[in-house]
Figure 1 (tube, one colour):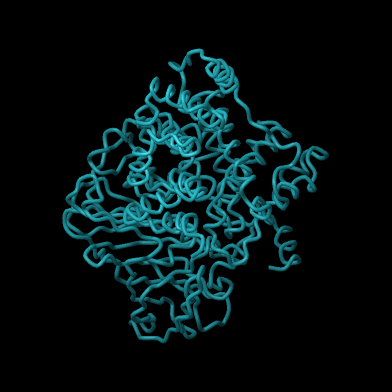
Figure 2: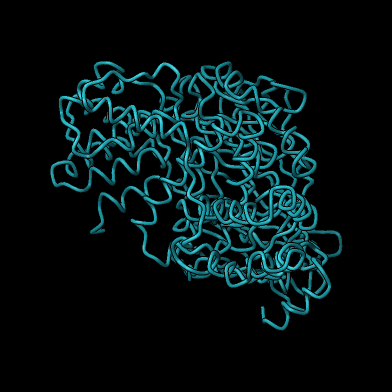
Length: 613
């Protein structure tokens, strides 16, 4: 879009969108030409074929024409397109399509002839077993051992691997779906899931709120259901159902405090699906049904900030969405900020500050490791795969940016700005350029000489952190550091009141020259090698690799074999890859673990372990 066009749009307020709700932003990661023909509604019919590890069916789209184009452009990735049809004269008629060459990041362009009068287009297709947005688990890879499991992960551009679609967050669409499975399995989607335990093998779904394509999600398996409140329930395999319902019992309160700060929850229900350990992320904010890793079911509710994060996306990300993956910080920076505000409202300033400080430490680690160009919020991606931008930069640097604005303008003023932002852009997708126009008008101009646009541009377009960026600290962590110094001199640690966050700070900040005797002493006194808290275990195992603490090696192997959350496994593989002996060992473990890893986890860790490929 031209600069003049953007300026013209800004004059008429926040109506930055076409009447269809399509953001006027270019997305180099999609073949879609939304300014010609867009697809505001999808009717999806799918059969889940576990035996052949594929989905097959058809996707039907309403066509919304914005000019006289006679073709619609869509995204696919390794889909088998069987035929395409148009709805003309109240009947389906065959039409021609062209499938382009495979691009390593973008997949293949699907061009369908739609003539000048058709109102709908239908694509008959099936997926391949290796679809990047799906994972298929055998019964043996589940907890129950009796039934298979399948789940999707569409963000950022993996929806095109299981649906032919205009796979750009600039598009918003509603959808209905009919899904068939083998009897006895329960299918769920990012839609209006029934709480009935009827498992007849056919399920119908509706998502009446317009969402970007990456939020279309599906899963099927031997799921049970337990309600937490009137509008919150947990879906999970039976083994973890009661534990998860207890762990996440504060979710209804989280909704209440977020509504009080930032306006109404607009998605009706907020349910949680606890996935198998192979799920590659902590959570995925699929509307109405967040997908959650079992690694946060810790038994002490110490890791539920992840639930606060996924819930926060119901305002920042799902409601107001980044228009392209260059703008990921608009989703994740806002969400990390809102997450921390939720945790502060429910559990107090100290806990929220500890979590903020831990995130800041992770960001500093990322800033040391990443190339400067990848530490920019409004990142220049080119056609690199958008998976490449998922570091702590859009999350925590984005959060720091908003915390900086809160500090400069005051919490009351900034909260009013955020609430208005969520209202004004509800169910729309925006770019960083559009955000800057809005920020200038609604905040900076209202309080002149507080923050300059030059400073805003430094935050958004320059690498690293500004010199005056917030530096989150925690009084609780300062006390941990004092204890650490005494312990290194032989004193006992007083850990009875420590939370997970204090343990993480302690382990992550131990001196790298810590003696083997002190490693063994810690392990003997606190059982860190066998600890079941996945985050503490991760920190300990990473330190054990650095210190060549061999008593932890068997647990490290088991950890890598049983957990697929990329945040927890890739730093361990990265550390192992630093020495020849550890790299050889890590490759052996990885090849054993690989069948249970999600395709996204495989891609990330193979780049670490086999860089020559």
